[in-house]
Image (cartoon, rainbow, N blue to C red; front, side, top):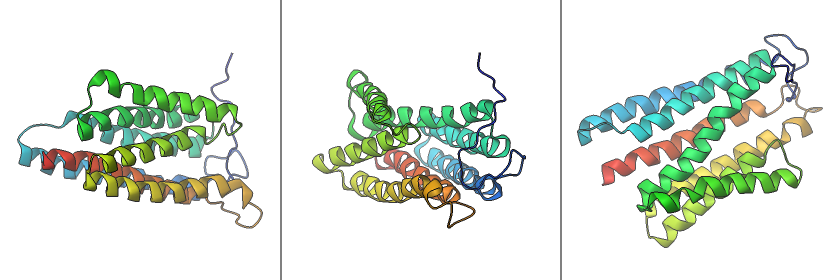
Amino acid sequence: MFNLNMYIDNYCERLDPGLFGEPFNTITNIAFLIVAYCLGKYLTTVEKNIGYSDRQSRYLINLVWFIGFGSLAFHIFSSLWAGIFDTLPIALLILSYSYLSLRRFFSINKYISVLAPLIIILMNLVLNKMGDVTNSAYFAALIGMILIGCIAFLCDKKRIFFGMLISVIVFTISLTFRIFDEILCLNIAIGTHWIWHILNALTLYIIIKLFIDHKLDH
């Protein structure tokens, strides 16, 4: 049986099991909450302009709120239950965006679009088997973003292509800081995971705003 209160120490900054063992990793989760708030305000303005509610975008924004609070809980409590609360909304956002973006950006029917999250899951499993358990889901998400960008390029959808290109660049830098958190631990006492939070929040802002803006364009 799983012990939901099991202590987890995954990051360089944490030195003890205390509630505030990761101050930088904890505080920088505010980036997700700021992004969720700003996107929510922006979506409200867009909905007034288009004359109806955009439930898909609101759903994605709500997941960003959950990501912020989930990550905040994990870096405070550093327990298994908090880890689940941290990873579940991230997984939901990755899988949801892969499906919804194909539907919205390219008008691909739902039966083909549902293959996108299935491919993401398959890539995650393959990368997992190759040894990178911690970051496999994020590499799968990165590949998914690249594929969306490639489809946009082939379909001559320049706004989506450039939006995804910027997202891929920011997310690649973000993921690099996540990977190097433990590697640089001896030289950087606070680690680099907190930078991942900020850049990852920026990535979410870019891709979700791109998703919202597509309603204005059509």
